[in-house]
Amino acid sequence: MAANLCIKERYQLLDLAQQDVLSDTFIGRDIQTHKSIWVVRYHSSILEVSELKYILELADRFTTFSHTHVARLLDVHFDGVQLYCVYEYDPTWQTLKSFFENQQGNNLKRLWKISTQILKGLNALSLANLFHGNLNFSNIWIQKDGCVLLNRAGIDAQIIRYNIDQLSVIDEGPFLSPDYFQTTLLSTQTDIY
Image 1 (tube, rainbow, N blue to C red):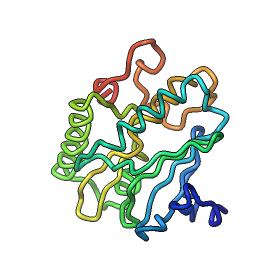
Image 2: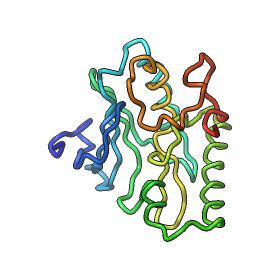
Image 3: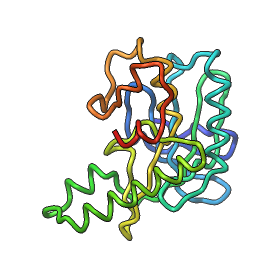
Image 4: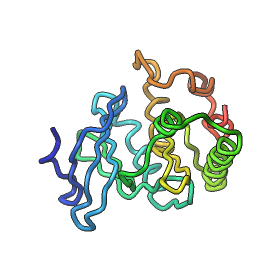
């Protein structure tokens, strides 16, 4: 479907991985490094010019942020219509949802390790004055070695906040904090909610 689409003459979109009310997400390839990437293409219908400047500034902050438990945002590109966020990715990683579905029972030690790593990632974001804001089973990856990575931090949350009145369905509605529906700023407490 997107095999011929290239972003910035560097990132090739290969396969559509998932879709939601905010975006289409693709597995792709960095043409220069030949590494796999995860590309989020936000729907143009939800991007307002008035909010775009702040979202791009936020995305730039995330490109300089690095932590063991937060997936790296490698690059951001706005082509005048759509916003693309390029994340590190490895095809062996799986979402937390898939991880739990594939397990033969969940012991407390495994759950404790996963929870601890999630909290470490959230704490690191908080210390950098950043937040996740859209924490759910689809935005947490488990690497082959069991290391947890938070994915799609910050940007989704801001787009949801700017568009909350126009979105008829939010995929992970039960996980949204009341902060989304109030005028308060999103924070680490929003993530932990």
